[in-house]
Amino acid sequence: MEQTQTSCKPSGTMPTGTGCSSQASDDSALGLKLDDGSLSAEVVNKVTTHPCYSPEGHKYARIHLPVAPACNIQCNYCNRKFDCSNESRPGVVSKLLSPAQGAKRFSKVKERIPQTNVVGIAGPGDPLANPAATLATLKAVALAEPDVHLCVSTNGLALLEQVSALKSAGVSHLTITINCIDAAIGEKIYPWVYFNHKRLRGRQAAQTLIDRQLAGLKAAVAAGMLVKVNTVLIPGINDHHIEALSQELKNYGALLHNIMPLISDPAHGTYFGLTGQRQPTEDEVSTARQAAGTNMAQMSHCQQCRADAVGHLGQDVDLNDMASSESEVDSSVLVAVASKSGVLIDQHFGYAQSFAIYRVSATAIERTEQRTVGQYCVGDDCDAADSRMDASLQALSGVKHVLCSRIGMTPWQALEQHGVMPSTEYALFGIDDALEQLQSQLLENGQLQAVPSTTIKEAM
Ligand SMILES: C[S@@+](CC[C@H](N)C(=O)[O-])C[C@H]1O[C@@H](n2cnc3c(N)ncnc32)[C@H](O)[C@@H]1O
Ligand code: SF4
Image (cartoon, rainbow, N blue to C red; front, top):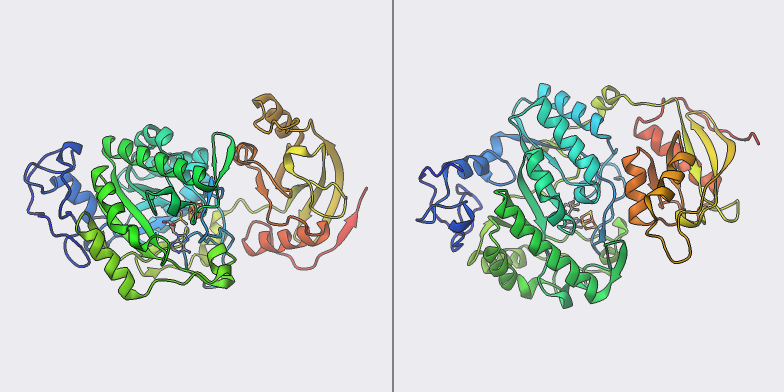
């Protein structure tokens, strides 16, 4: 890394300044800083040309490509469903994209907004719970435009094992959401964490996540990435802990700290929304930033963007007129339904011995066949061997969507990697109702050719 001295000097919090230095970090050993505590010219350039890292980057635009639907943890403030109209909060998107569609969207946007120099993957789930789609998208974008900044935003659970792949793909800017370093706090934020093929709960889940986040942070910094940490400020849960957290983040070499207010609304269908967890006041956010600012450079211009945000920060571009150019519009899709009763979506993917296959087009929903599969989970063993997944994939050949009541993370990821979209969104819905809702969603998202009217036909 180039070590040219610059005029960028420590300034503590960074709402309006250069945003390129921190007050007290002593991480020069990590290669980001010079001996006098200032940042190298290369780092300053990477920070000030990124709209999310520095207010100075406002002349540049960013695009988030929504290619990562699955998540390996659950946060009590998050619901990754598709958005309602005009909804703007992290984790929501209008339409998921494949890596090829993502790269195409980037090229279109770059033509229209040439200042787009940042391509990020931030969901709607966790990019590193969908590593194949994330890496394929990053590589396709880098091929089209080698000079863009590539960014990833992750909860950090799977970071340690992905750092070198991210580095090789050219990721320079990384954001990790770390809300606490105390598992007693973490268990109030994360109901479960899916790690090493097991769903962990309670304190063990929180401790595992925290350990992995800190190990991943350390590895990413050592690999030369500029690491920003997001912390969601949740009154009564982690607000008393912010200073201790920022001290640890500094020790681990994070460059910036972005304390974001919790967004909580009963209508969002999140645990915190439903339990009435309140959002912090502006004063509480600024107190937290001051407390953390004694250790870390603070950000305060974050817009808490959607996972498909496009354009300059705070001036998002409407993508509706681009949908048709993202093609991959089908005239019909095959949907596999896992059902025990034959009436409801009430079968776990792993325990299904057969799937009912439906052909869904814009004008019809037609049941075509029943396909038998070798059961994926055997006894308590849902950490199935690759061969059982291969057999399931073969049985589901040509299928684009699987509707089931539950599914493990391993088969979810394997299906996604093969272009099949699993969904538990319709668990316990009537099959007809679920298929009609899916049909409407595909039409709305431009993934089916739009022709009105619906009929359900039993062709068997
Ligand atoms: C949707 S996430 C996607 C990236 C990744 N899964 C993660 O959690 O870091 C992007 C950011 O939005 C934050 N976020 C999600 N829901 C939120 C909410 N209701 N209020 C405030 N921040 C939220 C996450 O904590 C994260 O920092
Ligand atoms: S890690 Fe990110 S995507 Fe996953 S539940 Fe939490 S906020 Fe949502």
